Length: 569
Image 1 (tube, rainbow, N blue to C red):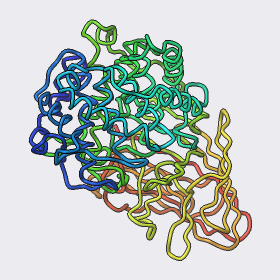
Image 2: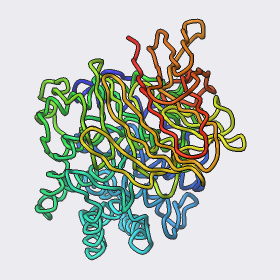
Image 3: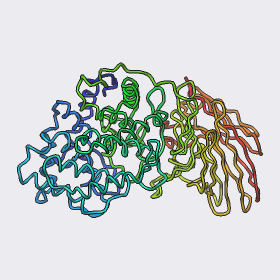
Image 4: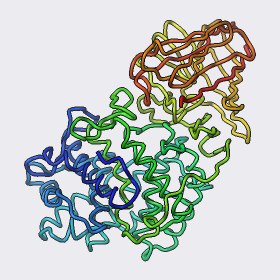
């Protein structure tokens, strides 16, 4: 697999490498593409549409840049058959909130950018079929969040090819998106407390596509989207490490290098939020980092997981085809060779603050001299609670080196694996912070109030200190409990390489992959290290977790700890 990303030709070669193993997985009628047996909560036909559509996020800009692909005829045939209700591979008629509306966006991308490839060669009847199939999105309810942009793209795409569309629906959706704008470049993904990668690879990505493609028809809104994205870039840059890796945080992490598509969309829309060389450097390093990780199977197909194949961390809406949403980062292929993005010399990250407060995200970002990133965080919450919501949003800290862990069960510390969490033991199960009751984010700390279960309330303050951070807890409990608090999970290859230092009030472990420790500053605790169940960590398949054991009496208990993780060289 192509691992070097420095110029346009490198991106083009990588796109061809990604396409190469997929051709044999298309259905006889070419409308469906299924590459594995892993199921999602939607049916197999929609999963096949997902595979067909998501490849277009890379193919469309490739075509727009003037390059054909080995899949061109397949795509055209698939559109004709998938939208023909008399064909056995018809994609379907839908109700409210269907997954198929997500995949319509990639087809609309083609209508907007490359109608010569996906529209003009169709017969008049095939065009009508295609139009009618897409128009279903205008007659049903969809999620009141980033999904509104799918309908925006469909209506803009149909308008671009002279098809039927709804201007009132288009205006209503664009106006509704504005209701989610928080200021300083930040949106929420709907009226929620969720401020994760969907702000970058959905809200801003689609807004920047709109700005780049609809500027002549809607110059004012296009200007606003560019200005918001430029503001957001000055915050979002803090989520990226010096080597190109991004902070693992939130849901949909199996989309992997979609984390970088915001930077690609900036270039596509002509938004020089930072010098072109800086934007190019962020995207290039990000792609090089991802393509150097074991994220492909033996055929070269993207797998489910994060840094390595891992079904355990995936959400119920992740089918085998889902990871190809990552191809959105190839939007830069639409730019000609002479574009300033391609002509710019790749630059490193600019000098960034060692500690940066991102109040809209409820984060304090720490960046050490080694270039890795840690986010202290409180307050985000995905109301519909996808799998492992608490672990993906509610830990005290997230690291671009150590990653984070999702439990195999809530029984036993090795399976619960509560890194950077305070967990209370009751009836054999560990209870953790699932959401915050209140949050205050200041220039030097984040305060939160939360309750892991009835009868226990905790106030927690997170504060950076040196290369680590301080956690202060005030615990009010109705009876006595045993509780544990984890530090950063340390990766390992062989157990004999590790040195453990555990005693009253401290737990530490070190090895070739670095070191991790948690140390008591106030209170009483016993220090322990545990080998976690394999594959609970998104970044590393084997980890050991230092943690403290507390005996919490009824009443009020105050605890202060210092936590740090130091990456290996």
